[in-house]
Amino acid sequence: MIALAVIFAFLLAALGLGLRARRGRDMDLEQWSVGGRGFGTVFVFLLLAGEIYTTFTFLGASGWAYGKGAPAYYILCYASLAYVLSYWLLPAVWRYAKQHRLISQSDFFVAKYDSPLLGALVALVGVVAMVPYLVLQLKGLGIIVSVSSDGRISSHWAIVIGTVALTLYVTVSGIHGSAWTSVLKDVAILAVVLILGIYLPLHYYGGVGEMFRAVDEAHPQLLTLPSSGMSTSWFASTVLLSAVGFYMWPHTFSASYSAQNERVFRRNAIFMPLYQLILLFVFFVGFTAILVVPGLKGADADLSLLRITTATFPSWFVGIVGGAGLLTALVPGSLLLMSSATCLAKNVYRLARPHTSERHIGRLAQLLVPALALISLYFTFNGGSSIVSLLLMGYALVTQLFPALLASLAPRRIVTKQGAAAGIVVGVTTVAVVTLSGVTVGSLLPGLPQAVKDLNVGVIALAFNAVVMVAVSAATRAPRGAELPPFRGRFERTGAAAPHKGDR
View 1: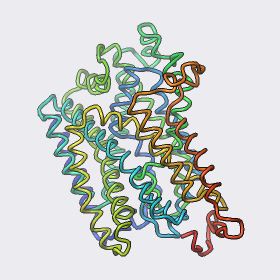
View 2: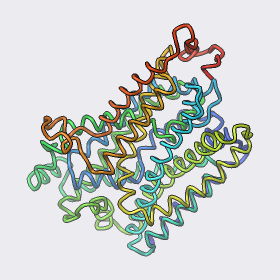
View 3: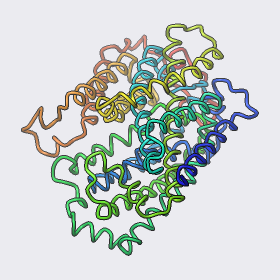
């Protein structure tokens, strides 16, 4: 009961912070979704860097270390590279978004390519990818609370209660609620991960070095990449795909709009890779559990952190671990709900009703939050294996937006709206067909070298995407005399030129 009481204390604290964040603000669409573009370094850091600490990281990183070993280190690598990319990418995105008062990720594509239809396509791709990602957070929440409370509250009821809490504060406070609860989440998760990652190897083995030596003696294959499957080429291609796709998630992309100025991103890019190193301690927990709680197979490997925690610590500390894990679901879940609702209201609904006022769009976005939460609950309880397949497609899907984004940042328009849309459709279709059918590069072309057969399918889809984008753009580009003027003011720090018709 002590652990359960501590977990509920965390839930009430998160709910209180989330609701209080609205105080003193007129919650129009800009305030609700991007914080009035007034967040400083700390809040932007927590919304972007803190986003890596979700239930997938809390359970999955330790579970992969436990069940797969060395391939788990891709989780450590890709976000570090994404943070380096953010030094150049996010200031350019922020400047354009501020100049044109953009709210959602889809708005960026609408303005750059002067195409509401392209914006609707981007919104739908993002929502399709985000629903299974939200389902993952809810399932993780249920597992964490149920195991940490020793089964005193069922996974089902934990998910329902958590979903009601995050829906309530997202609807009322928007991104302000997410920002304040992220403060509590990151303080809690930082403390828990450091304590577990340092104490457990020391307690059971005498230190981290001794822990790795014991694992190497018992399971030497876990400390190296295999020669096939999750091999070196799989590792490199997965890191590349995840790095370029990191900011393509609608909730992280639009969270960048909330910054006060572009210097926030450059300051954060210096420290965010260091913050990523905290994941090492999560891996240490998974490796420690290999010999302490052996026998966890398949999906049960994700329980390794919770199993070794409940076997080692008193119930009050187990409650703290469970509370921290609860927050890793609530904060990302709130951003996912808010971003999905904003994209659907602003870029799909408005396509059918173009003269809808901004105030009405804001109300609709808030109303869509509980509707999307109910849909996510349905898939959480009834999705089965299809949700797992969709989840595996998530990163590969949103990464298909990257070529069109990158092309839009060029000084001159080199890609047409038709080319951008065609590339996205081909990339997304490739990912969907290959993933749902279970086909791999190796099964399609068994004669290829092993390194090619092990490539992440998302990278191959990305290559098809880029080729089609360039080819269709070449075929649909206006004659030279009829071309739109070049983009102006994109990389200027101040005094950006007024947009022309093709650059709204």
